[in-house]
Image (tube, rainbow, N blue to C red; front, top):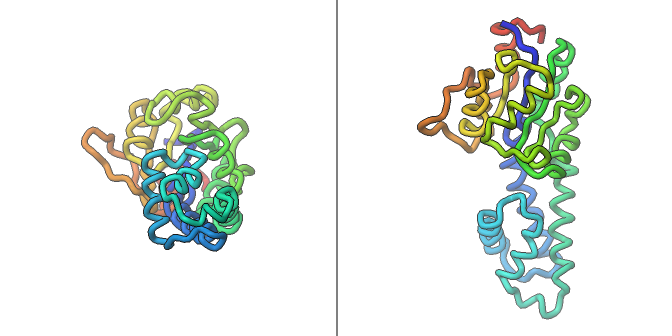
Length: 239
């Protein structure tokens, strides 16, 4: 059985979003403290976690809300914009240094393209944030033209299977000829499986576990070396 397309999630699939965010947020908090925020690192991190839980990670004013909640005494002598700017700058500096794909990602994508397989992304999130991740991860040269599908840009959010159906339609690929690889059983396995796609649970960085009602993945992998072997031995791809 061959495959015409292999589509991927981004977060906790091509790189460890969870680990990166943990490091980046700690660096941001340290920079805010170095620039005048007179509170302990652990207190600020704990409050930042609450802000993230309440406003979601896609909100773009986390640090402003953080200062409103903490009401540190330093704001009487320091412009809060400087503290916020320090956090934002440090977070973005961490992106420059540490936002990289897992080591086995690029070799797999390159091999798929050489095997004339359509390689694409179907991801949930804000357009500019997800697009930035794709660029920073260095995967753009290995993606097929027009094969990037971002929920915010499409007006369809995971786990709605319509986002996968739209991607297949635009690429001209039948569901049975396509595979999706992602970290969430409920968002990345059940929806594509409902359309007849093959689905792979990439669990090495996953924070998610299967729940009642989730579809069973066709394959479970802890790295893309294993996935590459599956693609070669079970689907006849020259990768």
